[in-house]
Length: 109
Image (cartoon, rainbow, N blue to C red; front, side):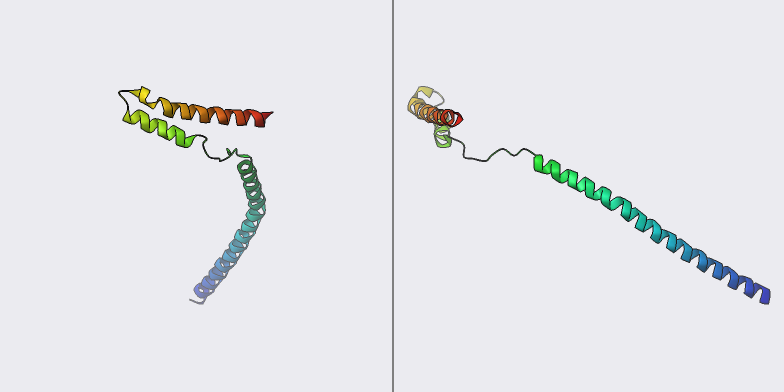
């Protein structure tokens, strides 16, 4: 009985030592993994940020002649059988478009 109690105590001590060693190794592996992964993760995040910064974004501005265009569409919708009734509306859109074109050509010089 005394031998069995001693063997059980030795076994319990060996299990405790093994668990402590295993916890120590797990902690070391976690620290190593953190040292390896964090710089890699930082590098990936930096690359993603650079790509995001380079992404093309079209300048936002109002669509030229939007009102005239909307009026033409409304007129054509109301006069589907006789689109010639929209001649004045189309002329107004054409004048607006020509004015915008002139402005852009001047800006390009």
